[in-house]
Image 1 (spheres, one colour):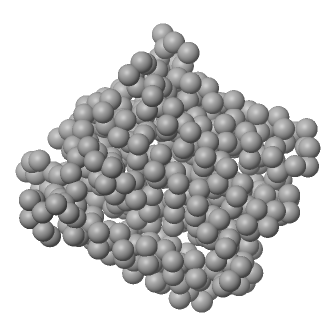
Image 2: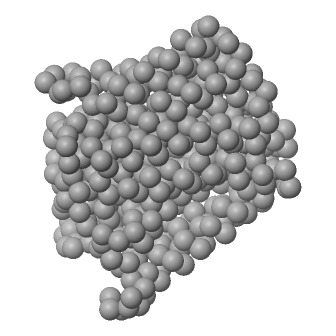
Length: 403
């Protein structure tokens, strides 16, 4: 690593730092979104069915949740950089295993290990934000990261579709491997250590659980984590079910699916941009309030259109773009609220938040995979239920919130 006087070193309040943190938090979504158009091809190529292919998504979320248990508390003790570089290395090795997998069981195991590695940059990207910024400024930074990060999942499915036109699904993992290696090199060379004071507590399972206690005792933390978890659950329902619903029910090609997915991500990007302008006027809760309304409206609208059954894929993608708008307004601010009271436990706060998010999303993915075997209507039902639940939670926890 170069010295702190080296001009290459990333510094707070710069676009370069924001972009780097955004890339770190995007590595998990990109490693999923890019291969979404290839799920039917993976199912055919490895001799499995829809449920088997979707298991590679759900197991990724399980691994993601498990990895987050360790990385945050560990980084509070030894620093952000070494833990981050370990996670990127593990992710790269597991991605190579995905590329070489010859059966669905091997791919599922490799995806689990890949998720263990991907958890580190996501957890530590949020922890670095808390190391560098406080309160509403942290929320603004997470929204800025979300704007940049949103471009990756918007482009990833389209890129995945283009790769499938020229090669098979294994080439997608080759591109992911190259990107992960380049990011690891950039971090090793340019990202400074941001942890201000290392935690003196020994690292053990008992110590980690004890460290989670003060977080769970905080009512705002519990509510913010639950709100973020419900909002992300609806997004993951779309991620895990959309490739089969849009490609099989509505007959979209891989490229058309990628473009439809990108349209939904544009809604998310718009939400993060609007959030940055609303902060100074309305604060965190004032940004979350219209966000949860969009979550509920998008989910309920999708269900209503699905019941009418127009036969157009727009009945899924248009309301999901509204949901994405709500996600961009809601999730970065909810995460900032959750982590704000705990500057000395930023890693642990980020880990616990991520564990709840990803563990719940994994359950949603497993349940949705089973339900989609019965009816495609399961997708809008799940998204509507989660969007309405997020809105209800916010209203009940903030009875005087001005909508």
